[in-house]
Image (cartoon, rainbow, N blue to C red; front, side):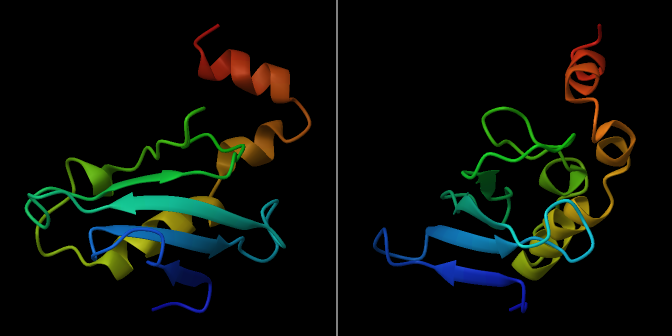
Length: 118
């Protein structure tokens, strides 16, 4: 699929579950990191998007504390024609374009407060 992704479907039988290993993009705070993601294809896939979340803790403004990814490709911009390659590209793209992380890379407490609306 992509040079920065490795799929491991061996943990669960069938093709309804993927374990994804995502390499951090170069020249970002995630460089040299490898992040494990969970992807489950429900009974209504591809009509409904897969459920995907980070299992590896990651500090990112579009990923919540339980790994849920906030990207409109998983809701209002999703269609049955969207490929898994496009979804993986979108998630990888979040790690490349992370404006808030750059602004607050040395201000984690301030970033968290701003994210919580304080």
